[in-house]
Amino acid sequence: MQRGFKLLIVENDMDYLIQLVAFFERQGYIVKAATSATEAIESLDDTIDLVITENDLPDNISGIQLNTQIKNKINDMRVFLLVGSNYQKNELAFMGLDKVFFKPCRLSVLMGAIQERMSELLKN
View 1 (cartoon, rainbow, N blue to C red):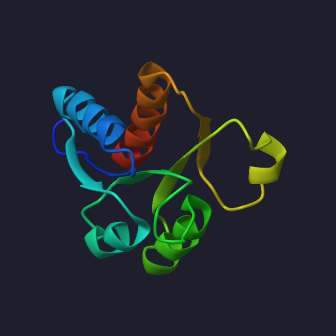
View 2: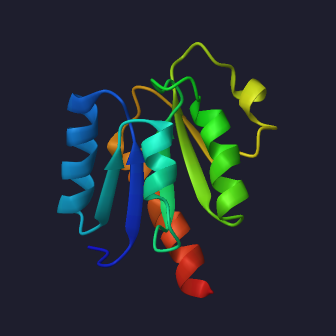
């Protein structure tokens, strides 16, 4: 259990968002949820340790574009992107994304990447 580590999850599929929030809260994380890029930017502050966002968001801002907006607001924020299988990994490699996961993503894989990020933060 990792107490105090704070995630912002951006997902417009409410069922999947509820599943993600419940899973990470059970693991001991503090979770903020947003259903759009606009809501995510409004929720973003320096208490957030990591943002997990899907790419297909409802307000004409993609997760890739949201990544840029987040990094303009908080330069060293880590952003993990969830994308559908219609993307090639090499298309996403040069977009400033910290990690890319293809849906459906096993939660254990996502959890491993989050724990890696936590370890980085604890070293600093």
